[in-house]
Length: 265
Image (cartoon, rainbow, N blue to C red; front, side, top):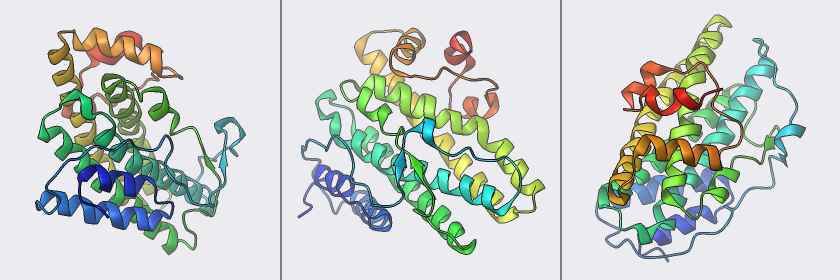
């Protein structure tokens, strides 16, 4: 029975069915906002979230290459990949809610990440509905199993988690989405383009939350945020920071180039 927010987080993380994960997330987020879950609690989240039997999960290097053209197959592969990212993002948000209890972060930190989880659940729902409209659905194509690696490698340190997940992975989404939106419009898929634009705009707030709480944590620890972020990214993120950057969207999240430009490839 869910009596605390950490109970809610673990319930979502141990739910395999994607749409049930979405439903629970949206219900628990609303209950937290409305004060119907009054206690934070303390639970150890699972090392890995539950996953459905489909899609089959593959190593990133074994994934079939996705074309960049405007064919129906390529657009389905794109939307399916984005849905998979959003499903993982739901779990990443709930994991950060309950994993780092010992840091003693303010309630605003928890409020922000519950809202992020709610947003990611809605994003998955939007993408699943669009896939259904196009005659497909989540689970119809393979997906890669590398997304949870960021959670595993940063499970010991909240600063590392914030540095890598919102400030690298989600910020990368800000970089690449505008071009994807442009190409979808060029290919005549205005519906998918509009959906991705909504996701992009809301992801700015997620990057902003990561930047804000990373800065809070650095101030609490008495360390320089720029130097600390660069050091954590070098240690815990594999793949390097790739140009070009969407400086406008990153600036909207208060994430300036002094962080990422000096260590970009």
